[in-house]
Image (cartoon, rainbow, N blue to C red; front, side, top):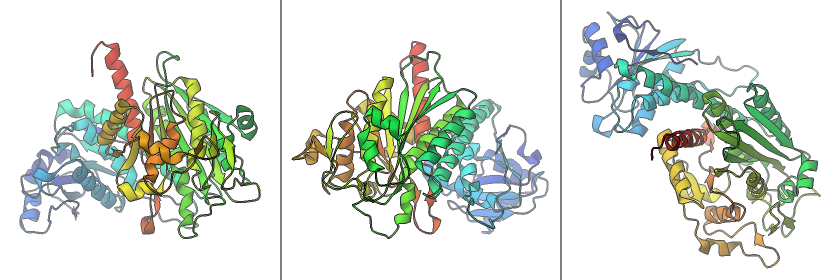
Length: 508
């Protein structure tokens, strides 16, 4: 999808449809006012007669407007002006593009950069437009024998009122397009069934990204033999019961001027299907355990976005990929395994397997002497109980890193919430027979899972994102969300900006 920027008179914009946001107070925004004047107050009259209620998310198609070059107008309600914030803005965007996706149009123009938002400039609004447009046209139809026709929408023109905002709108749209494509890639990987998306398939995806990058991305795949030699026995223990061989996937992007600049590392949990192993899950909704690799999928999506944006930083993406199945070779409750770090772990529950693959991946990260490490995982059902499906759980051994991620989440509107990682919680992981147990009981399950991982993240600033509640949606609209690609991409862009500011001798 393309996102050109136009600063001319919207009345003369030749497009199949122009989207016009309006507030309930009737005071029209600049683009809407110009269209209203040219069409003999068509917009104002529609609102005054009550034919359109501009409450938040309402849309109304006007199939013809006299005096206007656009073939159609689509009015979208913003609700009350004093309540219009980021969430309302995005809701109006989603409603607009859902309506556009259902129309027989190839192109449209939107006037959302007109909408006043406290502390949000034109580039942010343009980015949200680009992300929302791609979110609306996404379809997963790979396995439909007769898929419905896809949306025709291919071009969204950003109508900007002030000439000085044009460059900002272009840059925002560029970032939004890249993030939107990364989100779509993550959603597709998450939506693929477990019989297709295996650890081997994820390794192939990494290699494909490397081939398409023109040398910007190097890829290394560690197979089971290499992992055995390395000593990553915890990761290997999870896949013992599966016919699908486990993999550790390493992707390196060198964007900084110095190849020796400390990289930022993203580590993704890639359990391509999770039965629970010997600690077998209930059958209900077990099909959704194909989503247990959404942490890995978000690493892939973020790498894809970064390859498009090309920031000047170094990035390493690590995916610990395995399938958790029960058979005669599977790890059993009570087994004791050795990790790459050398710590022994008593496996009390084989369904707490994500931390067993992540711990070896975190230890592997040490060799890169990273500036930061962020792991992303659909790790605990307790995160859903604590935070529902709106916020990603965030835990960290470094307060500055945690604040950076929280800020990135606010900017990307892909938000997280900071949970404590106090030493007192570590006591729940004590084992009579090994250095630590892999579970700490029901209380504070999300926190004790992070406590487990923290034992393997003592050499670098580290944060853990538990996306169990945000990575996918259940029910009729079941499917992967693509989160937290927006947060992760923004975090990396912020680090580039921070490094540039330090280089120029400025304090952020």
